[in-house]
Length: 426
Ligand SMILES: [Zn+2]
Ligand SMILES: [Zn+2]
Image (cartoon, rainbow, N blue to C red; front, side, top):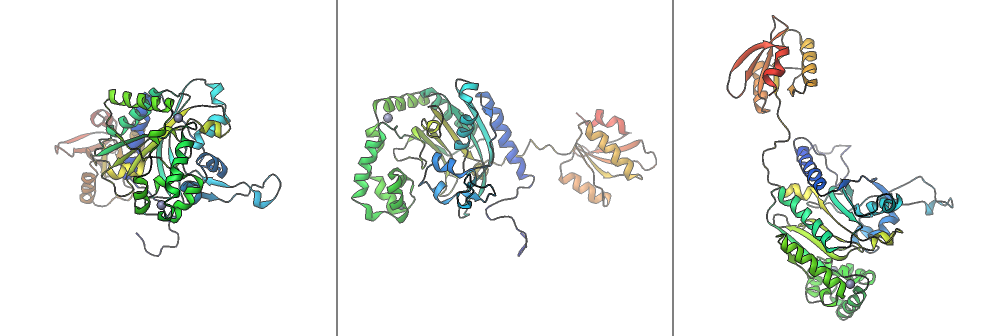
């Protein structure tokens, strides 16, 4: 990295060069293919949203909303013309609230009644202290299924995620699963939790004191050792689930068992967002450090109504591509095919060669051509390093002829430019 550079990238933002970019492409194309098999279509929503969407959707008091929103100053005036009431915009910190907003705004429940399955791929932004594996701009792949309250849908989205992760060859993953109740049964549990924590408040960290006021469930997300210790003995929501939530949970577990999905039940997995109901899950990798979650999701049966839409049950997940890339087995990259031909000498008429190469590229051949070639020896080395299949010399004496050398066998052929697609292009 260049030191003391005047125009560096913004903190927490990364540049991705080839060949690393091809890893992203590979993940993306695999996801698109697999998710299409599950009937998911791609949804693309804007990177910029009104802050209040997340304040309402994700929840006041969550770290995402309180500490991590990436505000963008806007010149838009508020309706009353007062600057301090101008709309606050943020770079989206997550996409579930955006997908739900789009679903409601476009009346998708009327346009396309029934269950809707979407996936998205794109950057998310969180303004946080950049630390290992924590970028301010990171990339998520996510799925949202709207319109079904059935346990079968929970099982389907979890199997979908498992399918995707195992298709990548990821090992040492753990699926954690919990049921967090619904508006009918959770208030009773929260009161119980408040009583438990209330008597032990002095042991909590400062953040948790704030969490306690807004939503005591968030104390489960704290990573401070003392808070964790306290919560390890806290009452769990399982004991307070209503009959419907308990039956739903049992049905989901049964379907996952029958599908052969290996999971662990974790009664303290609460997921730090307001919108979750019933099923929540998280996938962790023992190949990652402290920030070990690679994917997470859950059911959010009330979010559509909360954001002003018709009551619509829904469930989804998202995964962080950068986390996955950290643990992805580095198999040789087959998607980025090497050059079919590498031109090691352009011959006597470099411009003529330039146009011949252009014509062959249009026919689908991958051809490497330097506009400022060095010695043939240096170029041969380069062809070899790039894994080119054939090296090519344009003949100086006859502009229609070329020599090619098979880089694997050493076989040499003299032929015309026009014969190349037939000979090389298989
Ligand atoms: Zn319930
Ligand atoms: Zn704490």
